[in-house]
Image 1 (tube, rainbow, N blue to C red):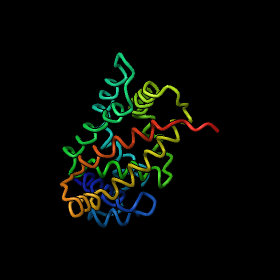
Image 2: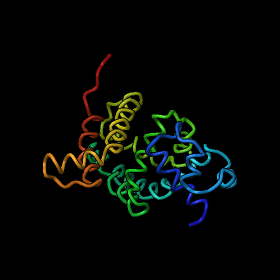
Image 3: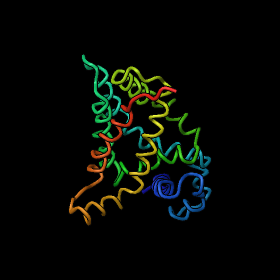
Image 4: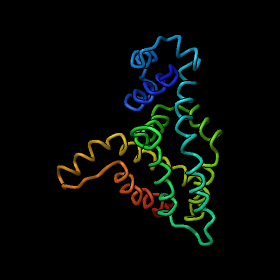
Length: 209
């Protein structure tokens, strides 16, 4: 394994578990068994390392997800919100073929970008992968045309919070399902269970102020 890949692999685990802000470069270099100069050489800074890590996942996720959302947008009749969110399932699960536990790790990293106030990362994603957000918002607007852009902002924020909490505790949830309900669930099962909940939340009645 080359040095750059070793750094990315160590960084993704630590960032997902501890967050971007509290994880130090020294912790990453220690886990990767490389020196600090290697990080500076390959990435230049912690910020650029974070971008490279997200790019590694988004380059895999973006093409199938954009196609899946486009298919929803191109329906001759208005899609349901459940259909909009279902469009994420297979592209997200395909990340498990790319990296071991890739789906869960990516969603935790994405959530960390919000929790840790990594504004530059949100800018990086929307600038370099506009097809994801544009097609998603377009599909939501077709499914629920009464929502304003501000309504969508708030509901997507709440959606992200739900996803982050669920995926960060997915291992515990899987154990509880097994021990308390004798139900065998994997990460795919967790995602398929959360989709109807998210769709219902985004589709909740509009509160008039």
